[in-house]
Length: 189
Length: 189
Image (cartoon, rainbow over all chains, first blue to last red; front, side, top):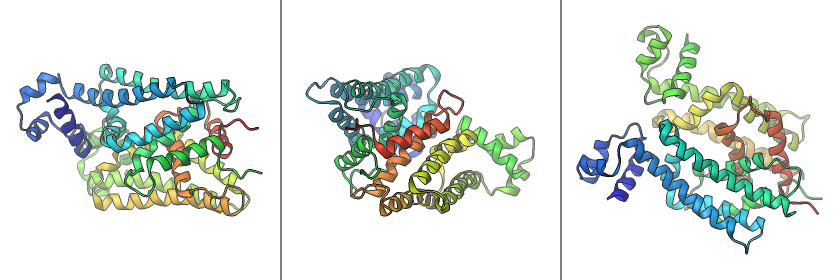
């Protein structure tokens, strides 16, 4: 039931917005009582936090697996991370949109857990960049924090436009972005 | 008065959200009558559209000036465009946030004008990439559409985190992003 409430809410929040969707509408869509809702969630804030945490924790688990994979060098890990973010749009487009859009509707206490995990996600990316510099795969003299934010911008932004059913697959987009990030667009002499 | 209504609404929409802000609250904050509001705007939709159009038209005007500047090569134009987007956060952070966040609250008729201008902004960027390829400044064999979306992701995402009063200036961030886009992060042999 909890998962059903989550799924239905994700659908409604994506369609109508968090503020505009009432608990009443969620339970009506599921044909259950309000009691069922409040058995699992204290309020809408807790529900939204759960949606956010499920999404970011899913990304973090995948990311940590990639970071710890000793068979990959840093370029390969970077590829895997970019692909993971872009590919996750396929199954989790609505969750992702709610994640980016409704963050500001979370009250402080609920927001803090999310912000902490979001920061962790960024820091894991940055750790990879720093590892690559240290191991001589990536250039020295870069600002790893800003470079990380640039890469995250490219990948996160794809949530706004990327259509996994369109002309370009997640794999092709990853190849294009990775090539751009590694070698740039300048003509090589 | 029209500009005052726009400014106050930008402030309220950014703080509380578009849906959560009533015309009543806007006129109260300004200490004017509802009549004054409806003299300038048919409804909240028209007001939100105006905020969006003001923002995107400001970016488009700047962008077209850069594109037409014959004293610059494509790398320099790219630098100017990236700087323009990042720098515009300083004066227009709230407008930018509303632009990205509240787009989905626009009804179809209002939305269309916006989407058309947004597309134009992306296409202008793409034109520059294509020009650079043609002139031999940028690599051949790239997908200009996807490369453009990558660059836009980096710059647009900065609205979510960039603090013009922070440690890194808009100019420094532009230099970092431009270097990354032109030459990539790979160690050069």
